[in-house]
Amino acid sequence: MPIDPHVKRFLDTLAAMNPAGALTLTVQERRVALQRLLGFSGRGEAVGAIEDRTLPGPGGAVGLRVYTPAAARAGEVLPGLIYFHGGGFVAGSLNTHDPVCRSLTNASGCRVLSVDYRLAPEHPFPAAIADGNAATAWIAAHASELAIDPDRLGLCGDSAGATLAAVVCQMTTAARQVRVACQFLLCPIMDCAAESESRVSFVEGFLVDRAMLEHDLKHYLPADADRTDPRISPLRAPDLGNLPPTCVHTGEFDPLRDEGRAYVERLQGAGINTIFRCHPGMIHLFYGMRTLIPYADTAFKLMGADIRSLLMSERRRGKRMTDRLQVERLVRELHAARVDGDLEGLCRVFSRDARLRIGGSGDGKRISLDASGMSVIRPWLSVLVKTFKLSRYQLLSLTVEGMRAAVHWRVDIHSKITGAIVPTELMDLIEVSGGRVASLTEFFVPC
Figure 1 (tube, rainbow, N blue to C red):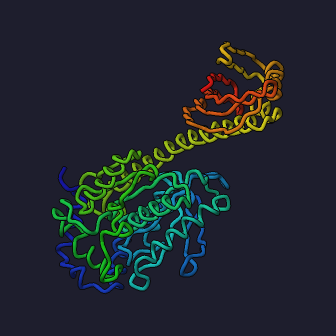
Figure 2: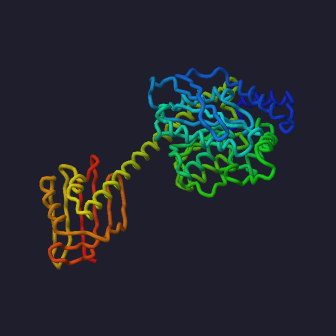
Figure 3: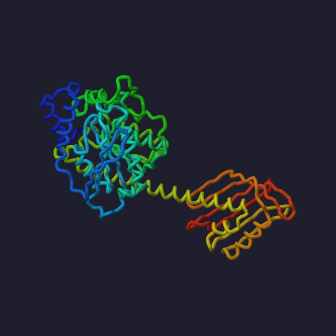
C-alpha cells in the first residue's frame, strides 16, 4: 500500500529542513537527535508502577527500569519481558524509550524490564552483549524477587536493541543458561553484511538510511570486525533450531524490513513457532512517534496481542514438557525398583486403583496376569521380587506422547528357584495420572 499520509507529511517536513548527513554527526549530536525524535512519543501511558534498580554487570552496575502494567494487581506474578532499547548501539537510554516501554507493558500484560546497557564508542562491541547476557541471567535468577513467572520470561528490543535481544537469545539458549519463553523483535537489524532489496529500495529519504547505519557501526565495531559474525548479524547464525517462539514486526517502508522477514523464514525452516507482521505504510521507528503517526496506537495493540499469543503457546508447550518429564521420571523409578528388587519402591510408583497386565512366554508356556487395585497388585509384585532378580538392564527406546509412554528395554532375568538366566526383551505401555502409574501393560519375550 502507499506510504501512510502522516508518515509522508513527517518525511516531507524532515526533508525540507535539509538535515546534515548522518556521517557528519558526532556521537553526541546523534544522541541528541534521537532524543528529540523520540520526544514525538508524547506523554507516556499511565502504568501500574515504575521502579529503578541496578544489577551487577561485567563492567559495573547496570541500570534496570521495571514497568508494571496498569491492570496488574499489587504483588501479582506476571510474565517478564526483558527490553533492550534502540539507538544503533551508540544512542538511546532508559528515558528516551520510556514511552515505548509503558505502551508495551500495558499492551502485553507483561512486567517489562528495560536494561541500560553500555553504549559505544565509550564501550564498543561486545560490551552491550556482555551486559545483555548478564542482565538476562540476573533477572532470571531473581524472578521471584521481581514478581516474574520464570517460565514466561521473554526477550525484546527495537532496532539495534532487537539485534541485541536476538543475539542474547541465541547465546543464552546455546549455553542453556536461561530458559527463554519467547522473543519479540521490533524493526530489528539482522544482517550488517548484505544489501537486501529493502535496503536498496529505501537507501535514503525514509528516516533510517544507509549513512546512519554506517555511522553507528563505525563507532560500535572495531575497524577489522567481521560483519558476518552472528553477534553482529544474527541472521547469519548457523543453527536456529533451539530458539523459542519468535515474533518479528517490521515496517513496509523500513530498509530493515527484508532481513526481519528473512529471519522469520529461517526460524520457520527450523521448525520454530513464529509470527511476522509488516506494518503497512510505516517507516522505521514509527512506534516512537505516536503524536505524529496515530497508527502507532494500533500497532502497540497488535504487539501486545502477539506477545500474549507467544507466551500462551509457550505455556502450553511448557505444560507438555512438564508432562513428559513427569512420565520419564516415573519410568526411571519403575525400572530402578524392578532392577533393585525394591518392593516398596515399586508400590510407590503405582496409583491406588492402578491396573497391571503382564503377558509373554517362558519355557514354551504362555504367562499372563491381569490385576487391578494395589491391594491385588502388591502381592503379585512381591512374588516377582522374591522369584526373579534382574541384571544388565538396557533401555532401548522411550517414546512419550502426552501422559502415555512406550518403553522398549532388555534385561537378564535370573530365576531364584531354578538358577536359570534368560536374556529377555520387554515392551511396557504406561499411562500416568495424578503423578503415578495408572496402568502398566507389559509384554516380554526371551531373546
